[in-house]
Length: 488
Image (tube, rainbow, N blue to C red; front, side, top):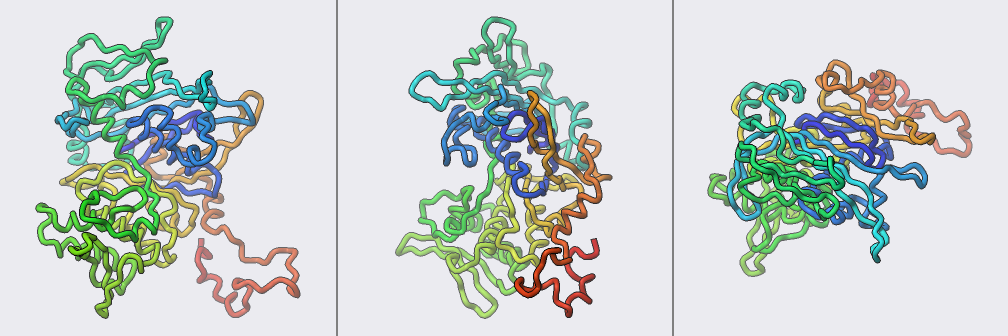
């Protein structure tokens, strides 16, 4: 669970410091940098798994366009930032496995991970350059410090279950730049003060964290596992509609592939009880979006070796996934995720309201909130699961809890005598985010966001040439106070 992220030098993110709760909604106009913040989270996840250059190329748009790694760095005109830095505070699982299937137990579950990277011009045939590791650190956050760093409200039982610390030495990974060469130091995790392993930073093709994979570095291994579970859902209707063969993995891909296999596996898992109860739970959830849904099931076709997802209406008609609307499929995929006990980590999603009728947006927001862990639970169970969404829809903003909302807007900054627009995040007054250091949004700015389209016709409107708008109808003007957002 990502509780705080500090980013600087990445795209238009300069000195950004944001705290997250189990559910966070980032709202703002197009082009202000909402997506860049999600990109930063996914880039950190990739750094925990892939070589530096591959992680960079996996970022949205970069690999699909020029592939120029330098495009990740903040720049004004043709002047680029020297470095990009990331610092993430997170709660990790207390137990897990490494890449070899060996069990690992963390000595601390609340940690801070930091990494700094700079661009290195490659003199070889790779003219697009590469990334160089400048600094990498991993430290624990003590139980006493956790009270200060974890600002959102949570029950004592929740904190006791998920926040532990048996570590005496603060560092798991540190950087030594006292000599002519920088070295990344990897400290043992056995509680002692043995000699750390040294690795020359300039020669490293990947982060040290991404290579953690042994009993000596078990906490770093679990930090790696946590960051690898951060993902961005970009649910594609074509992938959601596709049946699965019997050998398909029973885990939902980022684009929504393998939804039938995942649901079939959940319904027939030894720990799930009766298969029909799982299907009924998903159907009940989907009925919040479409009232006519009476059943959801996966058909197992032995002759073609296919698993096909079906929805059945109240009149008994069964519709395969290929016949369902885009919004219905996305809602269905999230409903299946919500009942998967092993699905944890951070789930990022852009504009979840796409394909959803405005009347059904509250159902979508409730589903996304239910996906996230409940920090007030008196008997918390399962893995931590966190949801971070962005939107530009006033209808979504009106439905999210006030303490989960961040409003994104551009702010003018000055660097090297050049001005530029950077991302700025505001919260609502009276929420826990104020104590976390966020600035409150002016009321007028929030009201303007909630009511973005003025009703008066444009001053230069020519009634003889321009079509009449719906809002200009005389039979509706009398009821304007009942229109959406009119009472804001």
